[in-house]
Length: 384
Image 1 (cartoon, helix red, strand yellow):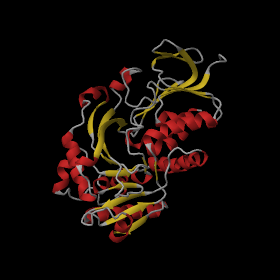
Image 2: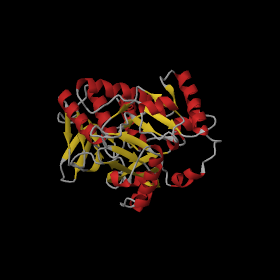
Image 3: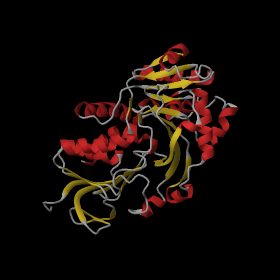
Image 4: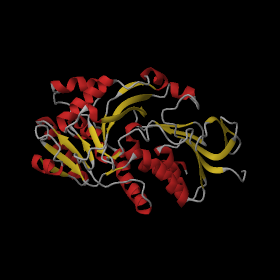
């Protein structure tokens, strides 16, 4: 084995790749991480920054709970923007109230700490909430939020400071990955080579560069999400992660563990929103601005371009109108709007072993911010 060969090369600088690097480094491995852009600009930064295991089911819930521990342990060593303000799901009608009580029963058995709040409790904590909307809520005080655009850069800085055997290179696009006798050679777009004993490819929704044939028939799909951010709103205070009635009707924990989920009717005013995959979330940033969203449109992984690059104003208008049923929200308060693109898989993540040395781990979808830290820990354990 060549002496300048890394123990592990990670392709992709997003949250999934970075936590693979982190857990490998904790095992004492020499790690190189390569990111094609100036810094991560994909789904890792185009999201709400909510760390909410309560919305997940099965092993992904366990990964999310472990992720809470990992985020907090890092935050104790360096500020990576983690805030422990909790999560609340607001039920807006009797069906949603019934479902949150069913989820509460599940989490009582599971031993996952939570509280059911009355309408008065919610309005006391969130006076900006409109009383007509609020019925009850389920609260998870242990859950976290981060500032996504800041967090990944801070996490990279933390890992660089903590581990002397970590190398991170931005602006480095890997165009080829070839297995040699006892190592893997990666070639970049500048024709520079890097060698690793193992390679993990965490490529998000970039399927056109490496192993394109694999992704043509992988079962992956792309979800396009529209999100908005208001200007700083000093008169509204929304601590924590705010999830609402449409979220209760969407997230997998409710679908998996609530017997009434499949039988409740869709209210008329929700039908068009559900056509666009809209559910309303709020996350207030440290500057007082509020992220509002989101919507979901889908394509096959190899048809990403068909989703287009535009942000549809009509979808934004639908989201603003629904948001305004919950808290005061005006279109003139919106300062920015963007689309995020997530790759996701029917099996929750795509795991493909090209060989004993080359491994693809991608398609974690909307679970990335919550579950990557815990998932990557067991992924590294399996590979090493």
